[in-house]
Amino acid sequence: MADAKELQVVVDPEALPSAGKSSKNDAGVTTEATQEKPFSIYTLKEKWFIVFLASVAAVYSPLSANIYFPAIPQISDAFHRSIELINLTVTVYMVFQGVSPMLWGSMADRIGRRPVFLACLLVLAASCLGLALVPTSEYWALLLLRCVQAAGSASTIALGAGVIGDISTPAERGGFFGLFMLGPQLGPAIGPVIGGAVADKLGWRWIFWIMCILSATCFIFILIFLPETLRRMVGDGSVMEPRLYRPLLSVTGRGRKSREAVKPPSRPLANPFRLFTYPDILTLLFFNGVVYAIFYSITTSISPLLTQMYPFLSETDLGLCYLATGGGMFLGSLINGKLLDHQYAAKKKQLVKEAEAHPEKGIKPEDVTKHEHFPIERTRLQNMPIVMLIFAAACAGFGWSIQRGVSLAVPLILQIIVGAAVLSVLNTCQTLTVDMIPSQSSSVTACNNLVRCSMGAALVSVIDLIINAIGPGWTFVALAGGSLAAIPLIWLTMWTGPRCRAQRRARNTAT
Image (cartoon, rainbow, N blue to C red):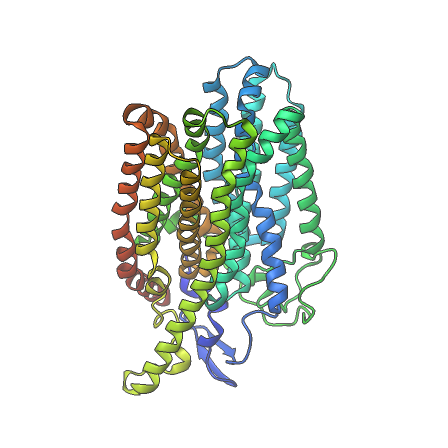
Protein backbone atom coordinates (compact mmCIF):
# COMPACT_ATOMS: atom_id res chain seq x y z
CA MET A 1 0.00 0.00 0.00
CA ALA A 2 1.47 3.30 -1.04
CA ASP A 3 0.69 5.37 2.06
CA ALA A 4 3.51 7.81 1.59
CA LYS A 5 2.80 8.32 -2.06
CA GLU A 6 -0.80 9.03 -1.28
CA LEU A 7 0.00 11.71 1.27
CA GLN A 8 1.03 14.11 -1.44
CA VAL A 9 -2.56 15.02 -2.10
CA VAL A 10 -3.78 15.32 1.47
CA VAL A 11 -0.99 17.20 3.22
CA ASP A 12 -1.92 20.13 5.46
CA PRO A 13 -1.53 23.38 3.52
CA GLU A 14 0.57 24.83 6.34
CA ALA A 15 3.03 22.02 5.65
CA LEU A 16 3.58 23.07 2.05
CA PRO A 17 6.75 24.86 0.98
CA SER A 18 6.86 28.58 0.32
CA ALA A 19 5.53 30.10 -2.86
CA GLY A 20 7.29 29.44 -6.12
CA LYS A 21 9.46 26.60 -4.87
CA SER A 22 9.37 22.98 -5.92
CA SER A 23 9.71 20.28 -3.30
CA LYS A 24 9.65 16.54 -2.91
CA ASN A 25 6.95 14.83 -0.97
CA ASP A 26 7.42 11.75 1.24
CA ALA A 27 7.52 9.51 -1.82
CA GLY A 28 10.22 11.58 -3.47
CA VAL A 29 7.86 12.95 -6.11
CA THR A 30 8.55 16.54 -7.11
CA THR A 31 5.53 18.80 -6.76
CA GLU A 32 4.89 22.48 -7.21
CA ALA A 33 3.12 24.02 -4.26
CA THR A 34 2.68 27.33 -2.56
CA GLN A 35 2.01 28.03 1.05
CA GLU A 36 -0.91 30.26 0.12
CA LYS A 37 -2.65 27.66 -2.00
CA PRO A 38 -5.66 26.28 -0.10
CA PHE A 39 -6.11 22.59 0.53
CA SER A 40 -9.51 22.69 -1.17
CA ILE A 41 -11.24 25.19 -3.45
CA TYR A 42 -14.46 24.87 -1.49
CA THR A 43 -15.35 27.77 0.77
CA LEU A 44 -16.03 27.15 4.45
CA LYS A 45 -19.79 27.37 3.88
CA GLU A 46 -19.56 24.93 0.98
CA LYS A 47 -17.58 22.50 3.13
CA TRP A 48 -20.22 22.64 5.86
CA PHE A 49 -22.91 22.01 3.25
CA ILE A 50 -21.06 18.98 1.87
CA VAL A 51 -20.48 17.61 5.39
CA PHE A 52 -24.17 18.17 6.19
CA LEU A 53 -25.21 16.11 3.15
CA ALA A 54 -22.84 13.33 4.18
CA SER A 55 -24.12 13.46 7.76
CA VAL A 56 -27.75 13.13 6.65
CA ALA A 57 -26.85 10.09 4.55
CA ALA A 58 -24.93 8.58 7.48
CA VAL A 59 -28.08 8.65 9.63
CA TYR A 60 -29.44 5.61 7.81
CA SER A 61 -26.92 3.10 9.15
CA PRO A 62 -27.95 3.27 12.83
CA LEU A 63 -31.50 4.37 12.03
CA SER A 64 -32.19 1.24 9.98
CA ALA A 65 -31.02 -0.88 12.91
CA ASN A 66 -32.69 0.94 15.80
CA ILE A 67 -36.03 1.85 14.24
CA TYR A 68 -36.60 -1.91 13.97
CA PHE A 69 -36.33 -2.75 17.68
CA PRO A 70 -39.80 -1.67 18.92
CA ALA A 71 -41.49 -3.68 16.15
CA ILE A 72 -39.84 -7.00 17.02
CA PRO A 73 -42.84 -8.32 19.04
CA GLN A 74 -45.26 -7.41 16.21
CA ILE A 75 -43.03 -9.01 13.59
CA SER A 76 -42.72 -12.12 15.77
CA ASP A 77 -46.50 -12.47 15.87
CA ALA A 78 -46.88 -11.74 12.16
CA PHE A 79 -44.33 -14.35 11.08
CA HIS A 80 -45.32 -16.83 13.80
CA ARG A 81 -41.71 -17.08 14.89
CA SER A 82 -40.12 -16.84 18.31
CA ILE A 83 -38.49 -13.64 19.55
CA GLU A 84 -35.15 -15.43 19.39
CA LEU A 85 -35.56 -16.10 15.66
CA ILE A 86 -36.61 -12.51 15.00
CA ASN A 87 -33.60 -11.34 17.03
CA LEU A 88 -31.50 -13.33 14.57
CA THR A 89 -32.41 -10.68 11.98
CA VAL A 90 -30.75 -8.14 14.28
CA THR A 91 -27.62 -10.28 14.55
CA VAL A 92 -27.21 -10.75 10.80
CA TYR A 93 -27.82 -7.04 10.33
CA MET A 94 -24.91 -6.24 12.65
CA VAL A 95 -22.70 -8.78 10.87
CA PHE A 96 -23.28 -7.18 7.47
CA GLN A 97 -23.11 -3.73 9.06
CA GLY A 98 -19.54 -4.56 10.01
CA VAL A 99 -18.43 -6.40 6.87
CA SER A 100 -20.00 -4.51 3.96
CA PRO A 101 -18.13 -1.19 4.46
CA MET A 102 -14.87 -3.04 3.82
CA LEU A 103 -16.02 -3.47 0.22
CA TRP A 104 -17.80 -0.16 -0.29
CA GLY A 105 -15.09 1.83 1.51
CA SER A 106 -12.24 0.50 -0.61
CA MET A 107 -14.32 1.07 -3.75
CA ALA A 108 -14.96 4.67 -2.70
CA ASP A 109 -11.21 5.23 -2.25
CA ARG A 110 -10.73 3.96 -5.80
CA ILE A 111 -13.68 4.95 -8.03
CA GLY A 112 -15.10 7.91 -6.14
CA ARG A 113 -17.36 8.87 -3.24
CA ARG A 114 -20.42 10.01 -5.19
CA PRO A 115 -21.23 6.85 -7.21
CA VAL A 116 -20.77 4.61 -4.16
CA PHE A 117 -22.98 6.91 -2.07
CA LEU A 118 -25.71 6.64 -4.71
CA ALA A 119 -25.32 2.87 -5.02
CA CYS A 120 -25.62 2.36 -1.25
CA LEU A 121 -28.74 4.51 -0.97
CA LEU A 122 -30.31 2.75 -3.95
CA VAL A 123 -29.66 -0.67 -2.37
CA LEU A 124 -31.11 0.59 0.91
CA ALA A 125 -34.28 1.94 -0.69
CA ALA A 126 -34.82 -1.25 -2.68
CA SER A 127 -34.32 -3.48 0.38
CA CYS A 128 -36.75 -1.39 2.46
CA LEU A 129 -39.32 -1.73 -0.32
CA GLY A 130 -38.83 -5.49 -0.23
CA LEU A 131 -39.17 -5.59 3.56
CA ALA A 132 -42.39 -3.58 3.39
CA LEU A 133 -43.85 -6.15 0.98
CA VAL A 134 -42.28 -9.37 2.29
CA PRO A 135 -44.83 -12.20 2.80
CA THR A 136 -45.16 -13.26 6.43
CA SER A 137 -44.87 -16.88 5.34
CA GLU A 138 -41.31 -16.33 4.08
CA TYR A 139 -39.06 -15.91 7.11
CA TRP A 140 -35.97 -16.55 4.99
CA ALA A 141 -36.84 -13.51 2.86
CA LEU A 142 -36.99 -11.32 5.98
CA LEU A 143 -33.56 -12.57 6.99
CA LEU A 144 -32.09 -12.05 3.53
CA LEU A 145 -33.54 -8.56 3.06
CA ARG A 146 -32.20 -7.46 6.44
CA CYS A 147 -28.73 -8.48 5.25
CA VAL A 148 -29.19 -6.45 2.06
CA GLN A 149 -30.53 -3.52 4.07
CA ALA A 150 -27.41 -3.53 6.23
CA ALA A 151 -25.16 -3.77 3.17
CA GLY A 152 -26.78 -0.65 1.76
CA SER A 153 -27.00 1.49 4.86
CA ALA A 154 -23.89 0.66 6.88
CA SER A 155 -21.31 2.06 4.46
CA THR A 156 -22.62 5.62 4.45
CA ILE A 157 -20.55 6.39 7.56
CA ALA A 158 -17.31 5.28 5.92
CA LEU A 159 -18.18 7.23 2.78
CA GLY A 160 -18.89 10.39 4.75
CA ALA A 161 -15.57 10.08 6.57
CA GLY A 162 -13.89 9.80 3.17
CA VAL A 163 -15.55 13.01 2.01
CA ILE A 164 -14.34 14.87 5.10
CA GLY A 165 -10.81 13.58 4.57
CA ASP A 166 -10.96 14.86 0.98
CA ILE A 167 -12.00 18.44 1.70
CA SER A 168 -10.53 19.28 5.12
CA THR A 169 -7.15 19.73 6.75
CA PRO A 170 -6.31 18.32 10.19
CA ALA A 171 -6.73 21.82 11.61
CA GLU A 172 -10.45 21.92 10.74
CA ARG A 173 -11.25 18.21 10.62
CA GLY A 174 -12.39 17.92 14.24
CA GLY A 175 -15.25 20.40 13.79
CA PHE A 176 -16.42 18.74 10.61
CA PHE A 177 -16.43 15.33 12.26
CA GLY A 178 -18.37 16.85 15.14
CA LEU A 179 -21.22 17.74 12.79
CA PHE A 180 -20.89 14.58 10.73
CA MET A 181 -21.06 12.22 13.71
CA LEU A 182 -24.32 13.79 14.84
CA GLY A 183 -26.08 11.89 12.07
CA PRO A 184 -24.93 8.33 12.82
CA GLN A 185 -25.03 8.81 16.59
CA LEU A 186 -28.54 10.29 16.74
CA GLY A 187 -29.92 7.20 15.01
CA PRO A 188 -29.90 5.08 18.20
CA ALA A 189 -31.74 7.89 20.01
CA ILE A 190 -34.50 8.77 17.54
CA GLY A 191 -34.85 5.33 15.91
CA PRO A 192 -36.75 3.66 18.76
CA VAL A 193 -38.99 6.73 19.17
CA ILE A 194 -39.99 6.71 15.51
CA GLY A 195 -40.21 2.93 15.30
CA GLY A 196 -42.36 2.63 18.41
CA ALA A 197 -44.81 5.32 17.31
CA VAL A 198 -45.09 4.03 13.74
CA ALA A 199 -45.51 0.38 14.75
CA ASP A 200 -48.11 1.33 17.34
CA LYS A 201 -50.22 3.54 15.05
CA LEU A 202 -49.64 2.16 11.54
CA GLY A 203 -48.13 -1.32 11.91
CA TRP A 204 -44.65 -2.72 11.41
CA ARG A 205 -44.68 -2.61 7.60
CA TRP A 206 -44.90 1.19 7.67
CA ILE A 207 -41.50 1.31 9.34
CA PHE A 208 -39.98 0.03 6.10
CA TRP A 209 -42.24 2.16 3.90
CA ILE A 210 -41.01 5.25 5.74
CA MET A 211 -37.40 4.11 5.50
CA CYS A 212 -37.86 3.52 1.77
CA ILE A 213 -39.26 7.02 1.28
CA LEU A 214 -36.56 8.68 3.38
CA SER A 215 -33.67 6.83 1.72
CA ALA A 216 -35.07 7.53 -1.75
CA THR A 217 -35.36 11.21 -0.85
CA CYS A 218 -31.75 11.24 0.36
CA PHE A 219 -30.71 9.53 -2.89
CA ILE A 220 -32.29 12.39 -4.84
CA PHE A 221 -30.55 15.06 -2.76
CA ILE A 222 -27.16 13.36 -3.15
CA LEU A 223 -27.78 13.01 -6.89
CA ILE A 224 -28.62 16.70 -7.21
CA PHE A 225 -26.12 18.38 -4.88
CA LEU A 226 -23.16 16.23 -3.76
CA PRO A 227 -19.96 16.82 -5.79
CA GLU A 228 -17.26 14.23 -6.28
CA THR A 229 -14.48 14.90 -3.75
CA LEU A 230 -12.02 12.01 -4.20
CA ARG A 231 -8.67 13.77 -4.51
CA ARG A 232 -7.14 11.28 -6.94
CA MET A 233 -9.92 12.30 -9.36
CA VAL A 234 -10.52 16.01 -8.68
CA GLY A 235 -7.41 17.09 -6.76
CA ASP A 236 -8.29 20.05 -4.55
CA GLY A 237 -11.68 20.21 -6.27
CA SER A 238 -10.55 22.35 -9.20
CA VAL A 239 -10.28 19.40 -11.61
CA MET A 240 -13.58 18.83 -13.40
CA GLU A 241 -14.75 15.29 -12.84
CA PRO A 242 -16.21 13.14 -15.66
CA ARG A 243 -19.76 14.07 -16.63
CA LEU A 244 -21.37 11.08 -14.91
CA TYR A 245 -19.75 12.14 -11.63
CA ARG A 246 -21.11 15.67 -11.64
CA PRO A 247 -24.07 16.77 -9.50
CA LEU A 248 -27.19 17.77 -11.38
CA LEU A 249 -27.07 21.18 -9.73
CA SER A 250 -23.64 22.63 -8.98
CA VAL A 251 -23.96 24.82 -5.91
CA THR A 252 -20.38 24.21 -4.69
CA GLY A 253 -16.95 24.58 -6.27
CA ARG A 254 -17.65 27.65 -8.38
CA GLY A 255 -13.87 28.05 -8.80
CA ARG A 256 -13.51 24.83 -10.79
CA LYS A 257 -11.20 24.70 -13.77
CA SER A 258 -11.07 22.44 -16.79
CA ARG A 259 -9.58 18.96 -16.95
CA GLU A 260 -6.23 20.62 -17.68
CA ALA A 261 -5.75 21.39 -13.99
CA VAL A 262 -3.16 19.24 -12.22
CA LYS A 263 -4.60 16.17 -10.53
CA PRO A 264 -2.92 13.47 -8.46
CA PRO A 265 -1.65 10.33 -10.18
CA SER A 266 -3.72 7.16 -10.25
CA ARG A 267 -2.90 4.40 -7.83
CA PRO A 268 -3.81 0.72 -7.56
CA LEU A 269 -6.70 -0.50 -5.43
CA ALA A 270 -5.44 -0.87 -1.85
CA ASN A 271 -6.37 -3.80 0.33
CA PRO A 272 -8.23 -2.36 3.36
CA PHE A 273 -7.45 -5.44 5.49
CA ARG A 274 -3.78 -4.48 5.37
CA LEU A 275 -4.62 -1.59 7.68
CA PHE A 276 -5.03 -4.16 10.47
CA THR A 277 -1.29 -4.88 10.22
CA TYR A 278 -0.43 -1.37 11.42
CA PRO A 279 -0.03 -1.54 15.24
CA ASP A 280 -0.99 2.08 15.88
CA ILE A 281 -4.21 1.82 13.89
CA LEU A 282 -5.12 -1.59 15.32
CA THR A 283 -4.62 -0.32 18.87
CA LEU A 284 -6.82 2.71 18.29
CA LEU A 285 -9.53 0.65 16.58
CA PHE A 286 -9.58 -1.83 19.46
CA PHE A 287 -9.86 0.97 22.03
CA ASN A 288 -12.72 2.54 20.07
CA GLY A 289 -14.37 -0.88 19.75
CA VAL A 290 -14.31 -1.43 23.52
CA VAL A 291 -16.05 1.89 24.18
CA TYR A 292 -18.59 1.33 21.41
CA ALA A 293 -19.42 -2.18 22.61
CA ILE A 294 -20.03 -0.97 26.16
CA PHE A 295 -22.17 1.90 24.94
CA TYR A 296 -24.20 -0.32 22.61
CA SER A 297 -24.85 -2.76 25.43
CA ILE A 298 -26.17 0.13 27.53
CA THR A 299 -28.41 1.27 24.68
CA THR A 300 -29.92 -2.16 24.10
CA SER A 301 -30.48 -2.64 27.84
CA ILE A 302 -32.33 0.62 28.43
CA SER A 303 -35.78 -0.55 27.35
CA PRO A 304 -35.97 -3.89 29.23
CA LEU A 305 -34.36 -2.44 32.38
CA LEU A 306 -36.64 0.59 32.50
CA THR A 307 -39.67 -1.60 31.83
CA GLN A 308 -38.75 -3.84 34.74
CA MET A 309 -37.97 -1.11 37.27
CA TYR A 310 -40.49 1.53 36.13
CA PRO A 311 -43.58 -0.44 35.01
CA PHE A 312 -45.68 2.73 34.72
CA LEU A 313 -43.80 3.69 31.52
CA SER A 314 -45.66 3.11 28.26
CA GLU A 315 -43.97 2.07 25.01
CA THR A 316 -44.03 5.68 23.86
CA ASP A 317 -42.47 6.79 27.16
CA LEU A 318 -39.72 4.20 26.76
CA GLY A 319 -38.96 5.48 23.29
CA LEU A 320 -38.75 9.05 24.60
CA CYS A 321 -36.23 7.95 27.24
CA TYR A 322 -33.75 7.31 24.44
CA LEU A 323 -33.76 11.05 23.71
CA ALA A 324 -31.65 11.57 26.84
CA THR A 325 -28.81 9.66 25.21
CA GLY A 326 -29.36 11.56 21.97
CA GLY A 327 -29.24 14.88 23.77
CA GLY A 328 -25.97 13.94 25.41
CA MET A 329 -24.55 12.98 22.03
CA PHE A 330 -25.60 16.31 20.58
CA LEU A 331 -23.81 18.20 23.36
CA GLY A 332 -20.76 15.97 23.11
CA SER A 333 -20.57 16.46 19.36
CA LEU A 334 -20.68 20.25 19.57
CA ILE A 335 -18.15 20.50 22.39
CA ASN A 336 -15.73 17.83 21.16
CA GLY A 337 -15.58 19.08 17.58
CA LYS A 338 -14.63 22.60 18.64
CA LEU A 339 -12.22 21.26 21.25
CA LEU A 340 -10.35 19.13 18.71
CA ASP A 341 -9.85 22.11 16.40
CA HIS A 342 -8.77 24.31 19.33
CA GLN A 343 -6.24 21.75 20.54
CA TYR A 344 -4.77 21.36 17.07
CA ALA A 345 -4.41 25.13 16.68
CA ALA A 346 -2.84 25.47 20.14
CA LYS A 347 -0.30 22.70 19.49
CA LYS A 348 0.59 24.19 16.12
CA LYS A 349 1.14 27.60 17.70
CA GLN A 350 3.35 26.03 20.36
CA LEU A 351 5.45 24.17 17.78
CA VAL A 352 5.86 27.29 15.65
CA LYS A 353 7.20 29.21 18.65
CA GLU A 354 9.60 26.39 19.49
CA ALA A 355 10.84 26.23 15.88
CA GLU A 356 11.44 29.99 15.85
CA ALA A 357 13.21 29.88 19.22
CA HIS A 358 15.42 26.89 18.33
CA PRO A 359 16.37 27.09 14.62
CA GLU A 360 19.31 24.80 15.30
CA LYS A 361 16.88 21.86 15.40
CA GLY A 362 16.41 22.24 11.66
CA ILE A 363 12.60 22.47 11.71
CA LYS A 364 11.16 25.46 9.89
CA PRO A 365 8.04 27.11 11.37
CA GLU A 366 6.09 26.41 8.19
CA ASP A 367 6.97 22.70 8.41
CA VAL A 368 5.69 21.97 11.91
CA THR A 369 2.39 20.53 10.64
CA LYS A 370 4.08 17.94 8.44
CA HIS A 371 3.35 14.37 9.48
CA GLU A 372 6.93 13.71 10.53
CA HIS A 373 6.96 16.69 12.93
CA PHE A 374 3.44 17.06 14.28
CA PRO A 375 2.42 14.84 17.28
CA ILE A 376 -1.10 14.24 16.00
CA GLU A 377 -1.81 11.28 18.33
CA ARG A 378 -0.92 13.15 21.50
CA THR A 379 -2.79 16.25 20.33
CA ARG A 380 -6.01 14.39 19.58
CA LEU A 381 -5.97 12.01 22.57
CA GLN A 382 -4.78 14.28 25.38
CA ASN A 383 -8.23 14.58 26.99
CA MET A 384 -9.34 10.98 26.48
CA PRO A 385 -8.24 9.61 29.90
CA ILE A 386 -10.43 12.20 31.65
CA VAL A 387 -13.35 11.48 29.33
CA MET A 388 -12.99 7.76 29.99
CA LEU A 389 -13.10 8.32 33.75
CA ILE A 390 -16.33 10.28 33.34
CA PHE A 391 -17.74 7.58 31.07
CA ALA A 392 -16.89 4.80 33.53
CA ALA A 393 -18.42 6.67 36.48
CA ALA A 394 -21.64 7.38 34.57
CA CYS A 395 -21.82 3.76 33.36
CA ALA A 396 -21.52 2.34 36.89
CA GLY A 397 -23.94 4.93 38.26
CA PHE A 398 -26.50 4.09 35.59
CA GLY A 399 -26.50 0.41 36.56
CA TRP A 400 -26.89 1.03 40.29
CA SER A 401 -29.55 3.72 39.80
CA ILE A 402 -31.61 1.17 37.87
CA GLN A 403 -31.06 -1.58 40.42
CA ARG A 404 -32.01 0.67 43.34
CA GLY A 405 -35.09 1.98 41.52
CA VAL A 406 -34.33 5.62 42.31
CA SER A 407 -36.09 8.53 40.65
CA LEU A 408 -36.25 8.13 36.87
CA ALA A 409 -34.48 11.48 36.51
CA VAL A 410 -31.22 9.94 37.79
CA PRO A 411 -30.69 7.29 35.07
CA LEU A 412 -31.85 9.80 32.43
CA ILE A 413 -29.25 12.34 33.55
CA LEU A 414 -26.60 9.61 33.56
CA GLN A 415 -27.67 8.66 30.04
CA ILE A 416 -26.95 12.24 28.96
CA ILE A 417 -23.46 12.02 30.47
CA VAL A 418 -22.84 8.62 28.86
CA GLY A 419 -23.98 9.95 25.48
CA ALA A 420 -21.75 13.03 25.66
CA ALA A 421 -18.71 11.03 26.78
CA VAL A 422 -19.05 8.24 24.25
CA LEU A 423 -19.57 10.68 21.37
CA SER A 424 -16.39 12.49 22.40
CA VAL A 425 -14.46 9.21 22.29
CA LEU A 426 -15.93 8.01 18.99
CA ASN A 427 -15.51 11.40 17.31
CA THR A 428 -11.91 11.74 18.48
CA CYS A 429 -10.97 8.23 17.35
CA GLN A 430 -12.69 8.70 13.99
CA THR A 431 -10.86 11.98 13.40
CA LEU A 432 -7.51 10.52 14.40
CA THR A 433 -7.82 7.45 12.16
CA VAL A 434 -8.38 9.74 9.18
CA ASP A 435 -5.40 11.86 10.28
CA MET A 436 -3.25 8.73 10.29
CA ILE A 437 -4.28 7.44 6.84
CA PRO A 438 -5.97 10.42 5.13
CA SER A 439 -5.76 9.01 1.62
CA GLN A 440 -7.67 5.89 2.71
CA SER A 441 -10.18 7.63 4.92
CA SER A 442 -13.12 5.51 3.75
CA SER A 443 -11.19 2.26 4.10
CA VAL A 444 -9.89 3.00 7.59
CA THR A 445 -13.39 4.05 8.66
CA ALA A 446 -14.68 0.75 7.29
CA CYS A 447 -12.08 -1.07 9.39
CA ASN A 448 -13.22 0.94 12.39
CA ASN A 449 -16.80 -0.04 11.68
CA LEU A 450 -15.90 -3.72 11.33
CA VAL A 451 -14.08 -3.82 14.67
CA ARG A 452 -16.65 -1.93 16.68
CA CYS A 453 -19.67 -3.74 15.19
CA SER A 454 -18.05 -7.11 15.82
CA MET A 455 -17.24 -6.27 19.41
CA GLY A 456 -20.65 -4.66 19.90
CA ALA A 457 -22.47 -7.71 18.55
CA ALA A 458 -20.44 -10.03 20.80
CA LEU A 459 -21.18 -8.07 23.97
CA VAL A 460 -24.85 -7.46 23.15
CA SER A 461 -25.35 -11.19 22.62
CA VAL A 462 -24.43 -11.91 26.25
CA ILE A 463 -25.41 -8.74 28.12
CA ASP A 464 -28.86 -10.06 29.10
CA LEU A 465 -27.30 -13.23 30.48
CA ILE A 466 -24.88 -11.20 32.58
CA ILE A 467 -27.61 -8.88 33.88
CA ASN A 468 -29.79 -11.83 34.83
CA ALA A 469 -26.87 -13.51 36.59
CA ILE A 470 -25.44 -10.66 38.68
CA GLY A 471 -27.92 -7.81 38.34
CA PRO A 472 -27.66 -4.48 36.50
CA GLY A 473 -25.62 -2.79 39.23
CA TRP A 474 -22.63 -5.15 39.16
CA THR A 475 -23.01 -5.67 35.40
CA PHE A 476 -22.42 -2.01 34.68
CA VAL A 477 -19.67 -1.83 37.27
CA ALA A 478 -17.95 -4.58 35.29
CA LEU A 479 -18.48 -2.64 32.07
CA ALA A 480 -17.08 0.48 33.74
CA GLY A 481 -14.05 -1.58 34.76
CA GLY A 482 -13.63 -2.68 31.15
CA SER A 483 -13.61 0.94 30.00
CA LEU A 484 -10.99 1.84 32.62
CA ALA A 485 -8.87 -1.13 31.55
CA ALA A 486 -8.87 0.29 28.01
CA ILE A 487 -7.25 3.60 29.06
CA PRO A 488 -3.65 2.29 28.65
CA LEU A 489 -4.46 1.79 24.96
CA ILE A 490 -4.64 5.58 24.68
CA TRP A 491 -1.06 5.99 25.88
CA LEU A 492 0.05 3.05 23.74
CA THR A 493 -1.36 4.77 20.66
CA MET A 494 0.46 8.00 21.59
CA TRP A 495 3.72 6.08 21.90
CA THR A 496 3.50 3.82 18.86
CA GLY A 497 1.78 6.25 16.47
CA PRO A 498 4.74 8.49 15.49
CA ARG A 499 7.06 5.48 15.18
CA CYS A 500 4.64 3.52 13.00
CA ARG A 501 3.99 6.49 10.73
CA ALA A 502 7.74 7.03 10.36
CA GLN A 503 8.22 3.39 9.43
CA ARG A 504 5.48 3.57 6.79
CA ARG A 505 7.04 6.70 5.28
CA ALA A 506 10.48 5.10 5.20
CA ARG A 507 9.18 1.86 3.70
CA ASN A 508 7.23 3.57 0.95
CA THR A 509 9.99 6.04 0.19
CA ALA A 510 12.37 3.11 -0.29
CA THR A 511 9.99 1.54 -2.79
